[in-house]
Image 1: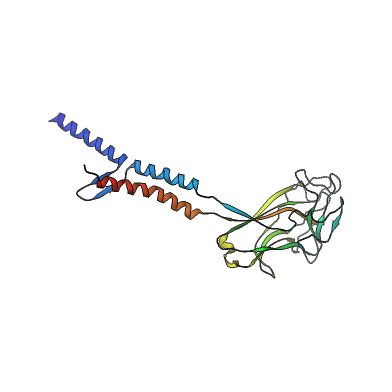
Image 2: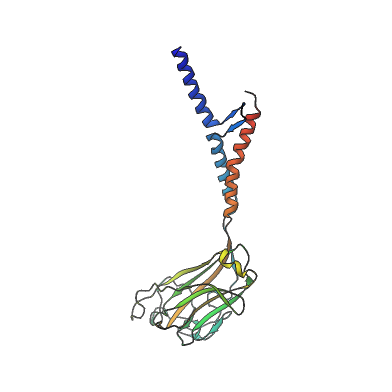
Length: 269
C-alpha cells in the first residue's frame, strides 16, 4: 500500500511537472492551462516578428546650404548674408583661418561656418523649410556649434525649431559652449555636435504648418559675449512604431499558446 501510494505520489508529481511545461486541459471544467513551452514558443515568435518589423524610420528634411559653403569666402573673409538663410542683425557666413587668429579645435571639417554676433537688438540665422509638420513624427535638429579662439562666447545663444510665418517658436534650447575658457587668448575652443529633439506630442498643435529652424541670440540683462558659430545643420523626421512592436510581441506570446491549447483540447486522451 505504501509502495503503491508512493508510486501514485510520484506519478502525480510527474504529471504536474509535465503539465507545467506542456500545459493541461481539464475535461470536466473545460479549463485550459498554458504551459511554459507555449509561452516560450510565443516569445520566440514574437521576438522574431519584432526583429523582422521596421525600426525607427528617419527621413532627412531638405535644408538649403546646411554647411554654409554656398557663399565662397577667402580665409578670414565674411559676409552679412548666407544663401538660403534669413539673416537678422549682425550674422552671415564666415571662413576661419587655420590655424591662426581665427581658429577652432581640430575636428571641424569644412571651410565656412554660419555666425551671429552680439547686437543690442539680437541677431539670428533662420530658414523656413519646404516641409510641414506631420502627425505622429518626431523631429531631431543636429548641428555643430563652436566658439572662436579670438572672441568671447555669446551667452544666451540658442537653437530652435519654429512653425509658420511669422514664426512661432515650438521648442528651443540654449547652445552650450564646451570650450576651455570663453575669452582667454590662446585657448582653443571646441567645435562639437549638439541636438534639439521635438516629440510628436510637442509638435501636434502645429500639424500642417511650415517647419523652420533658427539659430540666434536674444539680448537680455547680464548676457555678454561676441559671437557664436554653427555648421553642418540637419533636421530628421522619424517614426517610432512602439505600439505596433508591443502588439507583435503580445500576438507572438498569446497566439501560439491559444492555438496549442485548442489542439490539445480537441485531441483524444
